[in-house]
Every structure is written in structure tokens, then in C-alpha cells.
Image (cartoon, rainbow, N blue to C red; front, side):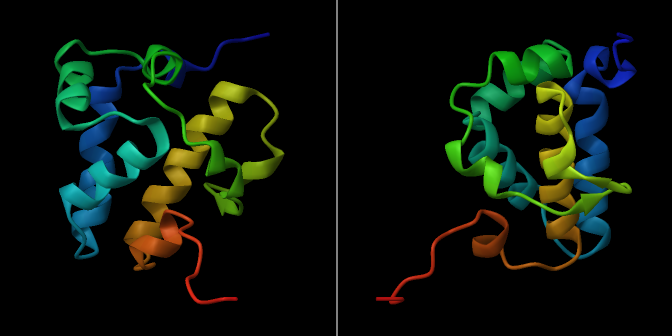
Length: 122
């Protein structure tokens, strides 16, 4: 099986593109960071360490402090690929991150992006 090039790319080389995509649509770097923290458990310092070390995507996800167990709720199409149909685990994680940033750029509310349960639905 051929390894995807994205696996060996540094997270730091792609991160500015996530931020630019969000900011282009009026969202913020802080919102992108919040999405990353929700998905991976990296706090601000941890994220900075990953970027300073030029950590590749494979290591970024392998060493994530706390992958969110509800990330499987992220469904839909990003870049023409249905996230829930991606079989390779690392590529699925990358596509989930892409999908979350895409939802942010499309103006979706943060509580919806982070799959926060609705309150008062009793």
C-alpha cells in the first residue's frame, strides 16, 4: 500500500492554510485552534510545540493527547470524499479535521461544529 504524502507533511506547513480558510470567511485563528483542541486534545502550548518541531501528520495524530471519542459523529463530504467512508484510520482523522475547518469556514455555529448536545431536549 502506498503511503499518502500528507502523512509525512508537517502539520505546521498545513496549519496556516486552515487559518487562512477560516479568516477568509470572517472566522478566527482562535476558532481553528479550538477545533483542533476539541479533536485532538492539544492545548495552545502543545500545538505550538508540534508546530515548532515540524511534527508530521502521522505523529501529530499518533501523539495527540486526547482524541475526542465523539469525533465519529463528524460526517459528510469534504474535498469530494465522504468522511465516514474513509477506511484508513489516519486519513479519516485528517479528513475529519478538514471537515471541521470547512464547517467553520462555511459559517456553521461552533457548538454544531463541536457536536455539542442540545440542552433542554428532555
